[in-house]
Image (cartoon, rainbow, N blue to C red):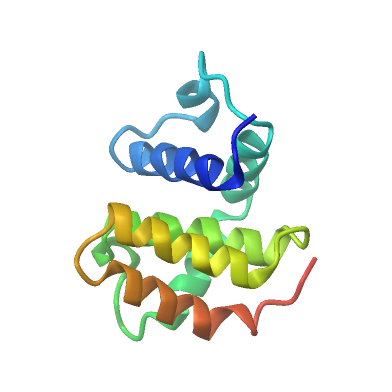
Length: 128
């Protein structure tokens, strides 16, 4: 069983792969021994991608989604999904985890960018 941090890391890697190889997430999960949380969240992100992307675009102040760093874009999708649809995860945990992953995998300013975006977004998102 993976920790939630490692599960989020796996989710981020799969979302990142999809940017370059537009395969169904289930194909990218094949043969991996992952926690149930991973396919559940990937299914949710896939189902709600239009909504998630619209929230990202609405808060980037003039940036097109495609111009965002792939890691930043996919971390935002993951974190916004968790904030919106996973009430079992405290919002501060979601934001802290996203910022840590942004620092690890993103660009020089990814941590502060992701933190600022999520700080602006999370209180606006209705739960459920």
